[in-house]
Image (cartoon, rainbow over all chains, first blue to last red; front, side, top):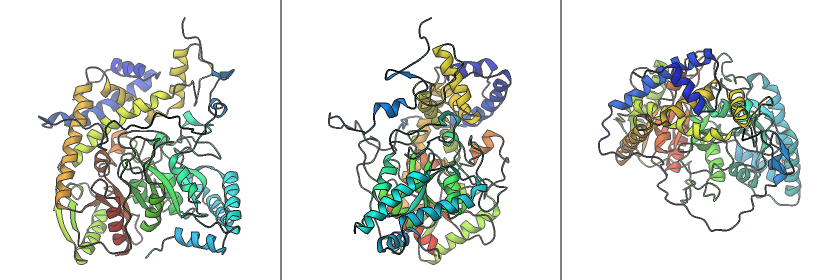
Length: 97
Length: 469
Protein backbone atom coordinates (compact mmCIF):
# COMPACT_ATOMS: atom_id res chain seq x y z
CA UNK A 1 0.00 0.00 0.00
CA UNK A 2 1.45 3.29 -1.09
CA UNK A 3 2.09 5.72 1.75
CA UNK A 4 1.80 9.31 0.60
CA UNK A 5 2.66 12.14 2.92
CA UNK A 6 1.74 15.81 2.69
CA UNK A 7 5.43 16.42 1.98
CA UNK A 8 5.24 14.03 -1.03
CA UNK A 9 2.27 15.99 -2.39
CA UNK A 10 4.04 19.31 -1.90
CA UNK A 11 7.16 17.99 -3.63
CA UNK A 12 5.25 16.70 -6.66
CA UNK A 13 3.24 19.95 -6.83
CA UNK A 14 6.51 21.87 -6.96
CA UNK A 15 7.80 19.56 -9.72
CA UNK A 16 4.53 20.20 -11.57
CA UNK A 17 4.75 23.99 -11.34
CA UNK A 18 1.61 24.11 -9.17
CA UNK A 19 0.83 25.84 -5.89
CA UNK A 20 -1.70 24.13 -3.62
CA UNK A 21 -3.53 25.24 -0.50
CA UNK A 22 -3.24 23.07 2.62
CA UNK A 23 -6.77 21.78 2.08
CA UNK A 24 -5.96 20.85 -1.54
CA UNK A 25 -2.80 19.06 -0.39
CA UNK A 26 -4.82 16.91 2.00
CA UNK A 27 -7.50 16.06 -0.59
CA UNK A 28 -4.88 15.11 -3.17
CA UNK A 29 -2.95 13.10 -0.56
CA UNK A 30 -6.01 10.92 0.11
CA UNK A 31 -6.81 10.54 -3.59
CA UNK A 32 -3.22 9.74 -4.58
CA UNK A 33 -3.04 7.06 -1.87
CA UNK A 34 -6.20 5.48 -3.28
CA UNK A 35 -5.07 5.72 -6.93
CA UNK A 36 -1.55 4.44 -6.19
CA UNK A 37 -2.99 1.56 -4.14
CA UNK A 38 -4.96 0.59 -7.24
CA UNK A 39 -1.89 0.91 -9.45
CA UNK A 40 0.14 -1.21 -7.01
CA UNK A 41 -1.45 -4.37 -8.45
CA UNK A 42 1.14 -4.02 -11.24
CA UNK A 43 3.82 -4.99 -8.71
CA UNK A 44 2.41 -8.53 -8.58
CA UNK A 45 2.78 -9.17 -12.34
CA UNK A 46 5.62 -11.46 -13.46
CA UNK A 47 7.51 -9.32 -15.97
CA UNK A 48 10.66 -11.44 -16.16
CA UNK A 49 12.15 -11.25 -19.62
CA UNK A 50 9.47 -8.83 -20.91
CA UNK A 51 10.56 -5.59 -22.56
CA UNK A 52 8.59 -2.35 -22.09
CA UNK A 53 6.51 -0.92 -24.95
CA UNK A 54 6.76 2.85 -25.30
CA UNK A 55 5.00 3.19 -28.64
CA UNK A 56 2.92 0.92 -30.82
CA UNK A 57 3.47 1.94 -34.45
CA UNK A 58 6.64 -0.07 -35.02
CA UNK A 59 7.96 2.97 -36.92
CA UNK A 60 11.63 3.71 -36.28
CA UNK A 61 13.53 6.94 -37.01
CA UNK A 62 10.94 8.61 -39.22
CA UNK A 63 12.92 10.87 -41.56
CA UNK A 64 11.94 13.63 -43.95
CA UNK A 65 13.79 15.70 -46.50
CA UNK A 66 15.73 18.57 -44.99
CA UNK A 67 13.63 21.23 -46.65
CA UNK A 68 11.64 24.12 -45.27
CA UNK A 69 7.90 23.45 -45.05
CA UNK A 70 5.71 26.53 -45.27
CA UNK A 71 3.07 26.10 -42.57
CA UNK A 72 1.38 29.31 -43.64
CA UNK A 73 1.61 30.66 -40.10
CA UNK A 74 2.81 34.20 -39.62
CA UNK A 75 4.58 35.70 -36.66
CA UNK A 76 1.76 38.13 -35.97
CA UNK A 77 -0.82 35.35 -35.59
CA UNK A 78 1.48 33.46 -33.23
CA UNK A 79 2.27 36.51 -31.11
CA UNK A 80 -1.39 37.54 -30.93
CA UNK A 81 -1.95 34.74 -28.41
CA UNK A 82 0.96 35.80 -26.21
CA UNK A 83 0.07 37.49 -22.92
CA UNK A 84 2.81 40.06 -23.39
CA UNK A 85 4.87 40.89 -26.46
CA UNK A 86 7.08 43.77 -27.51
CA UNK A 87 8.78 44.42 -30.84
CA UNK A 88 7.89 40.95 -32.16
CA UNK A 89 9.32 39.27 -29.07
CA UNK A 90 7.77 37.58 -26.05
CA UNK A 91 8.07 39.64 -22.90
CA UNK A 92 8.69 37.77 -19.64
CA UNK A 93 9.36 38.65 -16.01
CA UNK A 94 12.91 39.08 -14.80
CA UNK A 95 14.76 35.74 -15.00
CA UNK A 96 17.81 36.53 -12.85
CA UNK A 97 17.29 38.05 -9.41
CA UNK B 1 -32.79 0.38 -40.00
CA UNK B 2 -31.08 3.76 -39.88
CA UNK B 3 -30.16 5.29 -43.21
CA UNK B 4 -26.87 7.12 -43.81
CA UNK B 5 -27.27 10.90 -43.55
CA UNK B 6 -24.19 12.30 -45.24
CA UNK B 7 -24.39 10.91 -48.78
CA UNK B 8 -27.96 12.22 -49.35
CA UNK B 9 -26.92 15.73 -48.22
CA UNK B 10 -23.93 15.70 -50.59
CA UNK B 11 -26.16 14.50 -53.42
CA UNK B 12 -28.77 17.19 -52.72
CA UNK B 13 -26.15 19.97 -52.59
CA UNK B 14 -24.52 18.67 -55.77
CA UNK B 15 -27.80 18.52 -57.69
CA UNK B 16 -29.01 21.91 -56.44
CA UNK B 17 -31.96 20.50 -54.44
CA UNK B 18 -30.53 22.25 -51.40
CA UNK B 19 -27.64 24.61 -50.75
CA UNK B 20 -24.70 24.54 -48.37
CA UNK B 21 -26.00 27.79 -46.89
CA UNK B 22 -29.37 26.14 -46.17
CA UNK B 23 -27.66 23.13 -44.59
CA UNK B 24 -25.51 25.31 -42.36
CA UNK B 25 -28.35 27.67 -41.43
CA UNK B 26 -30.59 24.77 -40.45
CA UNK B 27 -27.83 23.13 -38.40
CA UNK B 28 -27.16 26.40 -36.56
CA UNK B 29 -30.90 26.69 -35.79
CA UNK B 30 -30.94 23.13 -34.44
CA UNK B 31 -27.92 23.92 -32.26
CA UNK B 32 -29.71 27.00 -30.89
CA UNK B 33 -32.80 24.92 -30.08
CA UNK B 34 -30.75 22.30 -28.22
CA UNK B 35 -28.82 24.87 -26.16
CA UNK B 36 -30.05 23.44 -22.83
CA UNK B 37 -27.83 20.38 -23.30
CA UNK B 38 -24.64 22.47 -23.30
CA UNK B 39 -23.15 20.26 -26.01
CA UNK B 40 -21.43 23.17 -27.75
CA UNK B 41 -18.91 25.63 -26.33
CA UNK B 42 -18.87 28.10 -29.22
CA UNK B 43 -20.32 28.48 -32.69
CA UNK B 44 -18.22 29.38 -35.73
CA UNK B 45 -21.23 30.87 -37.50
CA UNK B 46 -19.59 33.61 -39.58
CA UNK B 47 -16.86 31.46 -41.03
CA UNK B 48 -19.30 28.55 -41.58
CA UNK B 49 -21.69 30.74 -43.59
CA UNK B 50 -18.82 32.26 -45.55
CA UNK B 51 -17.56 28.78 -46.47
CA UNK B 52 -21.09 27.66 -47.33
CA UNK B 53 -21.56 30.62 -49.71
CA UNK B 54 -18.22 29.81 -51.33
CA UNK B 55 -19.28 26.19 -51.83
CA UNK B 56 -22.63 27.22 -53.30
CA UNK B 57 -20.83 29.53 -55.76
CA UNK B 58 -18.57 26.64 -56.78
CA UNK B 59 -21.57 24.36 -57.29
CA UNK B 60 -23.23 27.05 -59.41
CA UNK B 61 -20.09 27.04 -61.60
CA UNK B 62 -20.41 23.28 -61.99
CA UNK B 63 -17.63 22.38 -59.56
CA UNK B 64 -19.30 19.66 -57.55
CA UNK B 65 -16.47 17.47 -56.30
CA UNK B 66 -16.02 16.78 -52.59
CA UNK B 67 -17.14 13.73 -50.70
CA UNK B 68 -18.58 15.92 -47.92
CA UNK B 69 -19.85 18.77 -50.08
CA UNK B 70 -21.92 21.18 -47.99
CA UNK B 71 -22.10 18.87 -44.95
CA UNK B 72 -22.08 20.69 -41.58
CA UNK B 73 -20.20 19.16 -38.66
CA UNK B 74 -19.03 19.97 -35.14
CA UNK B 75 -15.46 19.45 -33.91
CA UNK B 76 -14.48 18.72 -30.33
CA UNK B 77 -12.95 21.90 -28.97
CA UNK B 78 -9.47 20.38 -28.76
CA UNK B 79 -9.14 20.57 -32.57
CA UNK B 80 -7.44 23.76 -33.72
CA UNK B 81 -9.86 25.54 -36.06
CA UNK B 82 -10.25 28.96 -37.60
CA UNK B 83 -13.38 31.01 -37.06
CA UNK B 84 -13.34 31.21 -33.27
CA UNK B 85 -11.60 30.14 -30.10
CA UNK B 86 -10.06 26.73 -29.40
CA UNK B 87 -10.27 26.17 -25.64
CA UNK B 88 -10.02 22.40 -24.96
CA UNK B 89 -12.82 23.32 -22.49
CA UNK B 90 -10.16 24.74 -20.19
CA UNK B 91 -9.77 28.12 -18.49
CA UNK B 92 -6.14 27.75 -19.56
CA UNK B 93 -7.05 28.25 -23.24
CA UNK B 94 -10.01 30.65 -23.04
CA UNK B 95 -9.50 33.27 -25.73
CA UNK B 96 -6.97 31.20 -27.69
CA UNK B 97 -7.21 31.82 -31.45
CA UNK B 98 -5.60 29.01 -33.41
CA UNK B 99 -2.96 30.32 -35.84
CA UNK B 100 -3.38 27.20 -38.01
CA UNK B 101 -5.88 24.34 -38.36
CA UNK B 102 -5.63 20.62 -37.53
CA UNK B 103 -4.77 18.38 -40.47
CA UNK B 104 -8.05 16.50 -39.84
CA UNK B 105 -10.05 19.73 -40.18
CA UNK B 106 -8.12 20.79 -43.30
CA UNK B 107 -8.82 17.42 -44.94
CA UNK B 108 -12.53 17.56 -44.15
CA UNK B 109 -12.73 21.13 -45.47
CA UNK B 110 -10.96 20.03 -48.65
CA UNK B 111 -13.87 17.60 -49.18
CA UNK B 112 -16.42 20.40 -48.71
CA UNK B 113 -17.39 19.84 -45.06
CA UNK B 114 -18.23 22.90 -42.94
CA UNK B 115 -17.42 23.23 -39.24
CA UNK B 116 -20.27 25.08 -37.52
CA UNK B 117 -19.12 24.88 -33.91
CA UNK B 118 -16.90 23.45 -31.21
CA UNK B 119 -18.11 20.71 -28.90
CA UNK B 120 -17.81 20.52 -25.14
CA UNK B 121 -15.41 18.05 -23.47
CA UNK B 122 -13.76 17.35 -20.16
CA UNK B 123 -11.04 20.03 -19.96
CA UNK B 124 -8.00 18.77 -21.90
CA UNK B 125 -10.03 15.57 -22.45
CA UNK B 126 -9.39 14.48 -18.87
CA UNK B 127 -12.49 12.58 -17.91
CA UNK B 128 -15.24 10.15 -18.82
CA UNK B 129 -18.35 12.25 -18.29
CA UNK B 130 -17.78 15.81 -19.64
CA UNK B 131 -18.37 16.99 -16.05
CA UNK B 132 -14.74 18.16 -15.88
CA UNK B 133 -15.39 20.87 -18.48
CA UNK B 134 -14.61 24.40 -17.28
CA UNK B 135 -17.72 25.40 -19.29
CA UNK B 136 -20.12 23.19 -17.29
CA UNK B 137 -21.25 19.63 -18.05
CA UNK B 138 -23.07 18.49 -21.19
CA UNK B 139 -26.37 16.73 -20.47
CA UNK B 140 -27.29 13.36 -21.91
CA UNK B 141 -29.79 13.80 -24.80
CA UNK B 142 -31.77 10.76 -23.59
CA UNK B 143 -32.01 11.88 -19.94
CA UNK B 144 -30.95 15.32 -18.78
CA UNK B 145 -30.13 14.05 -15.28
CA UNK B 146 -27.37 11.84 -16.69
CA UNK B 147 -23.92 12.38 -18.18
CA UNK B 148 -23.30 11.98 -21.93
CA UNK B 149 -20.01 10.16 -21.25
CA UNK B 150 -16.69 11.68 -22.07
CA UNK B 151 -14.48 13.09 -22.87
CA UNK B 152 -16.08 13.67 -26.33
CA UNK B 153 -19.48 14.18 -24.66
CA UNK B 154 -20.41 17.31 -26.59
CA UNK B 155 -19.59 15.65 -29.91
CA UNK B 156 -21.69 12.56 -29.11
CA UNK B 157 -24.59 14.68 -27.82
CA UNK B 158 -24.49 16.91 -30.94
CA UNK B 159 -24.96 13.86 -33.14
CA UNK B 160 -27.59 12.29 -30.85
CA UNK B 161 -29.51 15.58 -30.86
CA UNK B 162 -29.42 15.55 -34.70
CA UNK B 163 -27.73 18.95 -34.78
CA UNK B 164 -25.18 17.64 -37.30
CA UNK B 165 -24.78 14.37 -39.23
CA UNK B 166 -21.31 13.84 -37.79
CA UNK B 167 -18.87 15.23 -35.24
CA UNK B 168 -15.19 14.80 -34.54
CA UNK B 169 -13.84 13.39 -31.31
CA UNK B 170 -10.58 12.23 -29.82
CA UNK B 171 -10.07 8.93 -28.02
CA UNK B 172 -7.13 8.30 -25.69
CA UNK B 173 -8.68 5.62 -23.48
CA UNK B 174 -12.31 5.50 -24.57
CA UNK B 175 -13.23 9.15 -25.12
CA UNK B 176 -15.05 8.50 -28.41
CA UNK B 177 -16.48 5.05 -27.62
CA UNK B 178 -17.85 5.81 -24.15
CA UNK B 179 -19.92 8.89 -25.07
CA UNK B 180 -21.05 7.12 -28.26
CA UNK B 181 -22.30 4.28 -26.07
CA UNK B 182 -24.01 6.58 -23.54
CA UNK B 183 -25.63 8.76 -26.23
CA UNK B 184 -26.65 5.96 -28.62
CA UNK B 185 -24.53 6.96 -31.62
CA UNK B 186 -21.71 5.31 -33.58
CA UNK B 187 -18.19 6.23 -32.44
CA UNK B 188 -15.03 4.91 -34.05
CA UNK B 189 -11.51 4.99 -32.66
CA UNK B 190 -9.20 3.99 -35.53
CA UNK B 191 -5.85 2.21 -35.35
CA UNK B 192 -3.25 4.40 -33.61
CA UNK B 193 -1.59 6.58 -36.28
CA UNK B 194 -4.44 6.26 -38.79
CA UNK B 195 -5.39 9.95 -38.60
CA UNK B 196 -2.83 12.72 -38.17
CA UNK B 197 -2.96 14.48 -34.81
CA UNK B 198 -1.24 17.61 -36.04
CA UNK B 199 -3.11 20.58 -34.61
CA UNK B 200 -4.97 18.67 -31.91
CA UNK B 201 -4.31 19.53 -28.25
CA UNK B 202 -2.13 16.66 -27.05
CA UNK B 203 -3.13 14.55 -24.08
CA UNK B 204 -1.23 11.24 -24.07
CA UNK B 205 0.79 10.95 -27.23
CA UNK B 206 1.24 7.17 -27.24
CA UNK B 207 -2.53 6.52 -27.28
CA UNK B 208 -4.20 9.72 -28.62
CA UNK B 209 -6.36 9.04 -31.69
CA UNK B 210 -8.89 11.00 -33.74
CA UNK B 211 -12.15 9.62 -35.01
CA UNK B 212 -15.73 10.31 -36.12
CA UNK B 213 -19.03 10.12 -34.24
CA UNK B 214 -22.07 9.67 -36.48
CA UNK B 215 -25.56 8.25 -36.71
CA UNK B 216 -24.59 5.29 -38.90
CA UNK B 217 -21.46 3.22 -39.50
CA UNK B 218 -21.51 4.20 -43.19
CA UNK B 219 -21.31 7.89 -42.24
CA UNK B 220 -18.47 7.25 -39.79
CA UNK B 221 -16.57 5.22 -42.42
CA UNK B 222 -16.91 8.00 -45.00
CA UNK B 223 -15.59 10.65 -42.60
CA UNK B 224 -12.69 8.41 -41.60
CA UNK B 225 -11.75 7.85 -45.25
CA UNK B 226 -11.65 11.62 -45.78
CA UNK B 227 -9.33 12.19 -42.79
CA UNK B 228 -7.06 9.15 -42.81
CA UNK B 229 -3.55 8.93 -44.19
CA UNK B 230 0.08 9.86 -43.80
CA UNK B 231 0.88 13.43 -42.78
CA UNK B 232 4.44 14.74 -42.76
CA UNK B 233 3.46 16.95 -39.82
CA UNK B 234 2.75 13.94 -37.56
CA UNK B 235 5.61 11.45 -37.61
CA UNK B 236 3.44 8.84 -35.86
CA UNK B 237 0.94 8.82 -38.74
CA UNK B 238 0.95 5.48 -40.55
CA UNK B 239 2.44 5.23 -44.05
CA UNK B 240 0.22 2.26 -44.98
CA UNK B 241 -3.02 3.58 -46.50
CA UNK B 242 -6.44 2.76 -45.09
CA UNK B 243 -8.08 -0.19 -46.81
CA UNK B 244 -11.54 0.58 -48.05
CA UNK B 245 -14.27 -2.00 -48.19
CA UNK B 246 -17.86 -1.91 -49.31
CA UNK B 247 -19.18 -2.03 -45.78
CA UNK B 248 -22.67 -2.77 -47.00
CA UNK B 249 -21.51 -6.21 -48.15
CA UNK B 250 -22.03 -8.82 -45.42
CA UNK B 251 -18.67 -9.94 -43.99
CA UNK B 252 -17.42 -13.44 -44.76
CA UNK B 253 -17.97 -16.07 -42.06
CA UNK B 254 -16.24 -14.54 -39.05
CA UNK B 255 -14.40 -16.02 -36.12
CA UNK B 256 -15.64 -13.88 -33.22
CA UNK B 257 -14.21 -13.86 -29.71
CA UNK B 258 -16.25 -12.51 -26.81
CA UNK B 259 -13.98 -11.17 -24.08
CA UNK B 260 -14.72 -13.20 -20.97
CA UNK B 261 -13.41 -10.63 -18.50
CA UNK B 262 -15.85 -8.03 -19.85
CA UNK B 263 -18.92 -10.20 -19.39
CA UNK B 264 -18.37 -11.20 -15.76
CA UNK B 265 -19.25 -9.58 -12.46
CA UNK B 266 -19.97 -5.88 -12.29
CA UNK B 267 -21.83 -5.78 -15.61
CA UNK B 268 -25.28 -4.26 -15.41
CA UNK B 269 -27.92 -6.93 -16.24
CA UNK B 270 -29.49 -4.76 -18.94
CA UNK B 271 -26.10 -4.22 -20.63
CA UNK B 272 -25.38 -7.95 -20.48
CA UNK B 273 -28.80 -8.79 -21.91
CA UNK B 274 -28.57 -6.55 -24.99
CA UNK B 275 -24.95 -7.53 -25.69
CA UNK B 276 -25.83 -11.23 -25.43
CA UNK B 277 -28.81 -10.70 -27.76
CA UNK B 278 -26.48 -9.21 -30.38
CA UNK B 279 -24.01 -12.08 -29.93
CA UNK B 280 -26.90 -14.47 -30.58
CA UNK B 281 -27.63 -12.56 -33.82
CA UNK B 282 -24.04 -13.09 -34.95
CA UNK B 283 -24.35 -16.84 -34.24
CA UNK B 284 -27.66 -17.02 -36.08
CA UNK B 285 -26.04 -15.34 -39.09
CA UNK B 286 -23.57 -18.24 -39.30
CA UNK B 287 -20.51 -16.72 -37.62
CA UNK B 288 -18.44 -18.75 -35.18
CA UNK B 289 -18.64 -17.24 -31.69
CA UNK B 290 -16.46 -18.33 -28.77
CA UNK B 291 -15.43 -16.92 -25.43
CA UNK B 292 -11.84 -15.70 -25.24
CA UNK B 293 -9.84 -14.65 -22.22
CA UNK B 294 -7.79 -11.43 -22.14
CA UNK B 295 -6.52 -12.04 -18.59
CA UNK B 296 -4.93 -8.60 -18.22
CA UNK B 297 -8.14 -6.67 -18.97
CA UNK B 298 -8.32 -5.21 -15.48
CA UNK B 299 -4.56 -4.64 -15.27
CA UNK B 300 -4.90 -2.47 -18.37
CA UNK B 301 -6.67 0.15 -16.29
CA UNK B 302 -3.76 0.29 -13.82
CA UNK B 303 -1.30 0.54 -16.72
CA UNK B 304 -3.39 3.26 -18.32
CA UNK B 305 -3.52 5.40 -15.18
CA UNK B 306 0.28 5.33 -14.98
CA UNK B 307 1.21 5.79 -18.64
CA UNK B 308 -1.40 8.41 -19.51
CA UNK B 309 -0.82 10.77 -16.56
CA UNK B 310 2.92 10.48 -17.25
CA UNK B 311 2.41 11.61 -20.84
CA UNK B 312 -0.08 14.28 -19.73
CA UNK B 313 2.43 15.75 -17.29
CA UNK B 314 4.90 16.04 -20.14
CA UNK B 315 2.45 17.39 -22.74
CA UNK B 316 0.93 19.98 -20.40
CA UNK B 317 4.32 21.29 -19.29
CA UNK B 318 4.12 23.68 -22.27
CA UNK B 319 1.38 25.70 -20.55
CA UNK B 320 3.53 28.17 -18.67
CA UNK B 321 1.80 31.52 -19.11
CA UNK B 322 4.48 32.77 -21.50
CA UNK B 323 3.69 32.06 -25.14
CA UNK B 324 -0.06 31.45 -25.09
CA UNK B 325 -2.83 30.48 -22.72
CA UNK B 326 -3.76 31.86 -19.31
CA UNK B 327 -1.13 34.09 -17.74
CA UNK B 328 -1.28 35.37 -14.16
CA UNK B 329 -1.09 39.15 -14.21
CA UNK B 330 0.06 39.53 -10.60
CA UNK B 331 3.21 37.39 -10.87
CA UNK B 332 6.41 39.06 -9.72
CA UNK B 333 8.97 36.66 -11.14
CA UNK B 334 9.27 34.14 -13.94
CA UNK B 335 8.81 31.21 -11.54
CA UNK B 336 5.69 32.87 -10.14
CA UNK B 337 4.36 33.34 -13.67
CA UNK B 338 4.64 29.58 -14.21
CA UNK B 339 3.12 28.54 -10.89
CA UNK B 340 0.32 31.11 -10.69
CA UNK B 341 -0.70 30.63 -14.33
CA UNK B 342 -0.77 26.84 -14.09
CA UNK B 343 -2.53 26.84 -10.70
CA UNK B 344 -5.30 29.12 -11.99
CA UNK B 345 -5.54 27.76 -15.55
CA UNK B 346 -5.78 24.02 -14.82
CA UNK B 347 -8.74 22.47 -13.00
CA UNK B 348 -8.71 19.91 -10.20
CA UNK B 349 -8.64 16.86 -12.48
CA UNK B 350 -5.95 18.36 -14.75
CA UNK B 351 -3.77 18.96 -11.68
CA UNK B 352 -4.45 15.49 -10.32
CA UNK B 353 -3.27 13.88 -13.55
CA UNK B 354 -0.26 16.16 -13.95
CA UNK B 355 0.87 15.38 -10.41
CA UNK B 356 0.28 11.62 -10.64
CA UNK B 357 2.27 11.73 -13.88
CA UNK B 358 5.17 13.60 -12.34
CA UNK B 359 5.08 11.25 -9.35
CA UNK B 360 5.34 8.03 -11.40
CA UNK B 361 8.11 9.58 -13.52
CA UNK B 362 10.08 10.95 -10.60
CA UNK B 363 13.42 9.60 -9.52
CA UNK B 364 12.97 6.58 -7.24
CA UNK B 365 9.51 5.70 -8.60
CA UNK B 366 10.20 5.53 -12.33
CA UNK B 367 11.11 1.82 -12.37
CA UNK B 368 8.38 0.77 -9.94
CA UNK B 369 5.58 2.60 -11.75
CA UNK B 370 6.31 3.95 -15.22
CA UNK B 371 8.67 1.30 -16.55
CA UNK B 372 6.70 -1.51 -14.94
CA UNK B 373 3.46 -0.21 -16.47
CA UNK B 374 5.05 -0.06 -19.93
CA UNK B 375 6.28 -3.64 -19.43
CA UNK B 376 2.82 -4.87 -18.45
CA UNK B 377 1.62 -3.02 -21.54
CA UNK B 378 3.73 -5.47 -23.61
CA UNK B 379 1.99 -8.39 -21.86
CA UNK B 380 -1.43 -6.90 -22.68
CA UNK B 381 -0.45 -6.45 -26.33
CA UNK B 382 0.72 -10.08 -26.51
CA UNK B 383 -2.63 -11.25 -25.18
CA UNK B 384 -4.43 -9.33 -27.95
CA UNK B 385 -2.01 -10.66 -30.57
CA UNK B 386 -2.69 -14.23 -29.40
CA UNK B 387 -6.44 -13.58 -29.53
CA UNK B 388 -6.26 -12.16 -33.07
CA UNK B 389 -4.42 -15.29 -34.22
CA UNK B 390 -7.68 -17.14 -33.52
CA UNK B 391 -10.35 -14.51 -34.05
CA UNK B 392 -11.12 -11.82 -36.63
CA UNK B 393 -12.76 -9.47 -34.14
CA UNK B 394 -13.33 -9.31 -30.39
CA UNK B 395 -16.57 -8.19 -28.76
CA UNK B 396 -17.41 -6.66 -25.40
CA UNK B 397 -19.70 -4.01 -23.99
CA UNK B 398 -18.19 -0.50 -24.22
CA UNK B 399 -18.86 0.10 -20.53
CA UNK B 400 -20.22 -1.94 -17.61
CA UNK B 401 -23.39 0.18 -17.39
CA UNK B 402 -25.46 2.73 -19.32
CA UNK B 403 -25.01 6.46 -18.60
CA UNK B 404 -24.73 7.30 -14.91
CA UNK B 405 -26.26 10.28 -13.10
CA UNK B 406 -24.50 13.66 -13.04
CA UNK B 407 -22.39 13.85 -9.89
CA UNK B 408 -22.56 10.10 -9.24
CA UNK B 409 -18.82 9.51 -9.59
CA UNK B 410 -17.31 12.17 -7.35
CA UNK B 411 -14.48 9.82 -6.38
CA UNK B 412 -11.75 10.05 -9.06
CA UNK B 413 -10.95 6.32 -8.98
CA UNK B 414 -14.64 5.44 -9.44
CA UNK B 415 -14.64 7.69 -12.53
CA UNK B 416 -11.47 6.04 -13.86
CA UNK B 417 -13.12 2.59 -13.54
CA UNK B 418 -15.64 3.59 -16.21
CA UNK B 419 -12.84 3.11 -18.78
CA UNK B 420 -12.08 -0.50 -17.80
CA UNK B 421 -13.22 -2.02 -21.13
CA UNK B 422 -11.90 0.64 -23.47
CA UNK B 423 -8.34 1.28 -22.27
CA UNK B 424 -6.93 -2.10 -23.37
CA UNK B 425 -7.41 -1.47 -27.11
CA UNK B 426 -6.04 2.07 -26.61
CA UNK B 427 -2.81 0.86 -25.01
CA UNK B 428 -2.40 -1.69 -27.82
CA UNK B 429 -3.27 0.85 -30.55
CA UNK B 430 -6.17 -1.25 -31.89
CA UNK B 431 -9.18 -0.04 -33.89
CA UNK B 432 -12.44 -0.25 -31.91
CA UNK B 433 -15.97 1.00 -32.42
CA UNK B 434 -19.07 1.57 -30.34
CA UNK B 435 -22.29 0.57 -32.11
CA UNK B 436 -25.67 1.30 -30.47
CA UNK B 437 -27.66 -1.81 -29.53
CA UNK B 438 -31.41 -2.34 -29.57
CA UNK B 439 -32.58 -1.22 -26.11
CA UNK B 440 -36.23 -0.26 -26.62
CA UNK B 441 -37.09 2.52 -24.17
CA UNK B 442 -34.01 1.97 -21.96
CA UNK B 443 -30.89 4.13 -21.97
CA UNK B 444 -28.49 3.47 -24.87
CA UNK B 445 -25.85 0.73 -24.63
CA UNK B 446 -22.98 0.31 -27.07
CA UNK B 447 -21.35 -2.86 -28.35
CA UNK B 448 -17.57 -2.62 -28.66
CA UNK B 449 -16.05 -4.34 -31.71
CA UNK B 450 -12.25 -4.52 -31.59
CA UNK B 451 -9.98 -5.41 -34.51
CA UNK B 452 -6.31 -6.21 -34.99
CA UNK B 453 -4.06 -3.20 -35.65
CA UNK B 454 -4.58 -1.90 -39.18
CA UNK B 455 -7.88 -3.75 -39.66
CA UNK B 456 -10.06 -0.64 -39.42
CA UNK B 457 -12.03 -1.60 -42.52
CA UNK B 458 -13.01 -5.00 -41.10
CA UNK B 459 -14.17 -3.43 -37.84
CA UNK B 460 -16.35 -0.99 -39.78
CA UNK B 461 -17.76 -3.77 -41.95
CA UNK B 462 -18.64 -5.93 -38.93
CA UNK B 463 -20.12 -2.86 -37.22
CA UNK B 464 -22.31 -2.11 -40.24
CA UNK B 465 -23.49 -5.72 -40.10
CA UNK B 466 -24.20 -5.47 -36.35
CA UNK B 467 -26.14 -2.28 -36.96
CA UNK B 468 -28.26 -3.84 -39.68
CA UNK B 469 -29.02 -7.20 -38.07
